[in-house]
Length: 79
Picture (cartoon, rainbow, N blue to C red):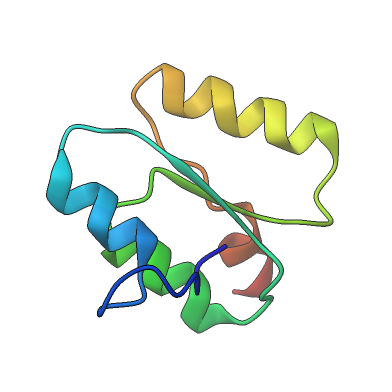
């Protein structure tokens, strides 16, 4: 969850990126707005999916990240 109350910054993705800038991680969010996708990218996430995404889309995200890429399909769908 992007808004877990675990830190002052309230941004787990940002914390992960600060801890290890080379760490690759996928954010799964229930928030469907464009700002969330942009925030995920800015925080260093390698991918961001909606919680309602299919298993196929999750697999594509994992494959993209594993091969060194990124995956932000909802962002493309909104353009």
